[in-house]
Length: 334
Image 1 (tube, rainbow, N blue to C red):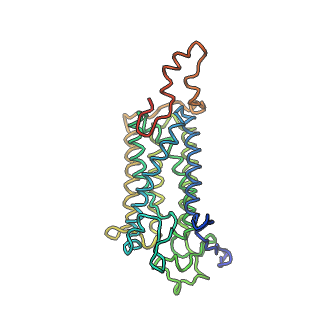
Image 2: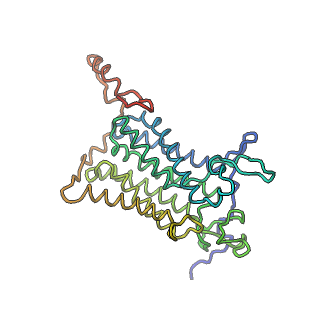
């Protein structure tokens, strides 16, 4: 007989979304998770840029612009998805505030992002930047793709602390408790008691998928470079993320629908199609299938060393110094 899991075997923690306070200012776990995810993504981006012989100093400037664009797109997607929560007080959809019982507003923390919206606006912003800076979009897309998975894998734990992004009740040993205040309408506490009901942790599934996805993309970049065309890793990311989110949407309740179909599934089908069609077009009959030989991936190029030379080449180095400079947000790198 298989093991029977009782609530004592499961995760009964219903965490406080606030990690600590600085004076009257609350610092939420959700923001901490995404900040840690962003820091990890930055470190990986710098490492991958150097490994591929690109300017790692571009990463810092680009992350500011792309992160803002992704936040705007992610927030817009979330607000449309959860409009019923914001319709009575629309200002709370724009600012991180909530209405208090006495009618005043208080800080509610930064939460509520829709990843599909962030991916769309972030990709558009990245494309505009690469055009402005005159660097190859597809090369940088391959640098960015694994970092997207890393940020997703870490940031998704913010949903645990907010008690959101969960699925139906489950008896699995990793089922999580959700207190009554955070239940969707389909699972009220009078029908699904807090003491005996646990739910599928969809955020955890997406996090694990992101971790495996990051490892897979990094492995492909190092061991299958001869079979890849620049940009393939981003297209693989689109397919991987799209399939993961499409499947998980079947287990969500109260999500945004369009003619009865979860909107996230419609959007992610778009991601999947872009990825599959893009890969087919690049690797179909008569298309180039190779870029660099596998052994080239073992060469770690430090960008600062690209223009190094002896003292006799100082004039040439000075003439090309503009190529090494870090561009401003509004100007190309050289």
